[in-house]
Amino acid sequence: MESITAAVACGLAFALSYYMGRRMASSTPVAAMMGGACGLAFAVLFFIATVALGAVLPGMFDGWTLGIHFIVLLIVAPIASAGVAVLEYRHLEKVEARRLPF
Image (tube, rainbow, N blue to C red; front, side):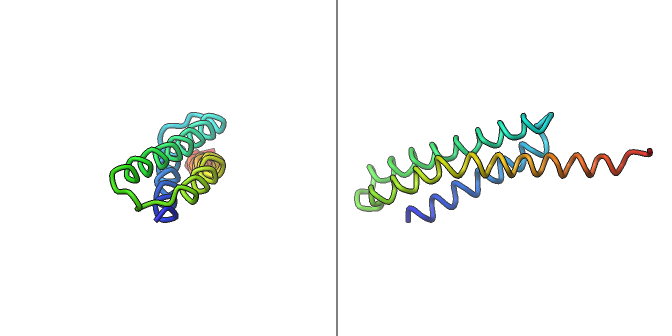
């Protein structure tokens, strides 16, 4: 169960960082910072949501694996989300550059 919720949190972080890189970033460093913030936010939301569900429904999550998944998400999600945002921003730059008449 912990793996499924971690995968969902990571997917949502990637989706939001893709959107940030496509619509809201003004430069490559800004895209990286916004993507990293998205990854960090979803890692923290994953932890808060699973701890709250674990308190309401005892026995649903294992504390050890929950902690391991949180630590991995805390490290991997911001880095990977920043990469997704930067790659999307760079792709958008190349597409826009092709539209220029010169």
